[in-house]
Length: 290
Image: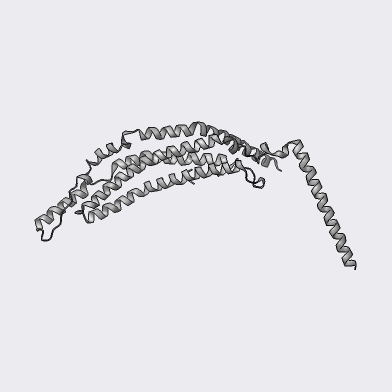
């Protein structure tokens, strides 16, 4: 092996060791700090439904009076309705309250995914993967070679990876919906603009906005629970995750007595099998001679 290759392998092993040390620190410090960050965010006044209701009552959409169309309406009434509609279009804005919530929530979701993915690769291996990304990578590096077979440690590692993947997938889905929210709301507004005299369409948009606020609050609370559950699972099973039984640390063949016993057993089986092959060869030779 060339000197350059040896140096590259040494640097790779050194990087893995430092990566594992970073992941332990990530689990003990970054996870709790991230959960406290989410808790502080939920305590902000803007994440209160009462606060949102007060904001809604001052919006143009909430105060817009739906036009009532009747047969035989005079030209003057039609002109008034058209004027109200034009005024509605000019005054109506996007829901700035929800836009502010999205600006607060999106960085939290991004950081959550990155954090989880980092742990996953550190222990166990997407633009979105720092909290979860780091955790996952760490666990990937700890999984032993496949020929040693599954055991409780490997199963625990896979369970931790599965938990991290589930949180990543659900958080990715939340981020995707945030980007789709404006498109869906604009479709509802276009439908409402075509029939501004239907009260249910206006109420549907208001309910849609309120549901988005409620969804963001519930999602943040669920994210805290998910991080707490994963953190608790990894801490309780740290020994099995970092040192699975099939690794060299728990390999029974490292003990001289066990190694000697299995060595003798292997030799005995080998000689018995060789004796059987020799007997079969002699019988075949005798049969051929006849």
